Amino acid sequence: MEKLLLRGKAALVTGGRRGIGRAIALALADAGADLAIADIVADDGKLDGVAAEIKAMGRRCLAIKADISSLSDVQQMVRATTQKFRKIDILVNCAGVWIPGQTLIETSEANWDKVIDTNMKGTYFCCREVGKVMVRRGGGNIINISSQVGLNPGMRAGAYSISKAGIIMLTRQLALELADKGIRVNALAPGIVKTDFNIDLWKNPEAERQLSLGVPLGRLAEPEDIARAMLFLVSEESSYITGAVIPVDGGWQASPPRH
Image (cartoon, rainbow, N blue to C red; front, side, top):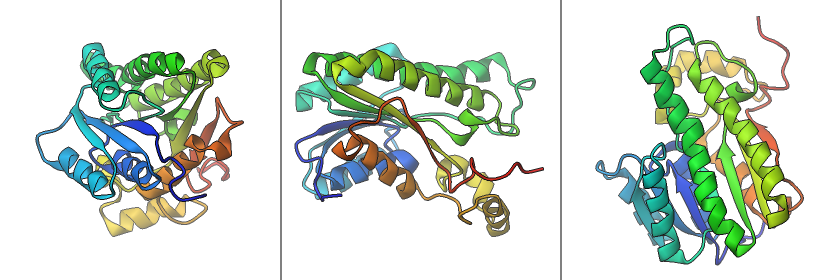
């Protein structure tokens, strides 16, 4: 795809401080977009660090502290972004939480609420508030980050699987409702991606090797693998795609069942 294909576009990325969110924000900036990046953590320097990387590319960037499970935070985030850029062309919902190792039976009400409120309700809040801006402008692109365990259950994924499955139906419903407004809504369903989010799964080289054996392409994903798929979905190269859920999992979904 042509370099700077997003020149003149303004994008908002949640969870932009690290991992997939950081890779997506940098990819959007590299393709020419100006960025607002948001995260629930803003006092460790990482969010400002990503903003500095984006500005070094010659793009404008706004760093925002926001808890997407709070409607007031989301509304303030959207206001700040539109005040800065006068529009939002692209929304990528990367923010999420995972409480590893808990089955649904073991999950407490507090942990259930934390996961569902952030991953599913928070993604909805962002889609709704940014969607209003896009409807007024007559177009836009929304990308939601689901997961392979949103398509198929995963051992000890618990409430995380439920939240990611909810994001898939949210994506499809919004795609249907917003199609006549010129807004496309799609989702990516990554497999295991090598980020700090799940470092306990792969930090041991032997553990990473064993996990990779279950992936037809023979390796775990890097954050940049997800970012490249995102770039296709926000570009005009995918102008006839909406309501899609694209696995970015090295062939995991297509492989035979593992016993």
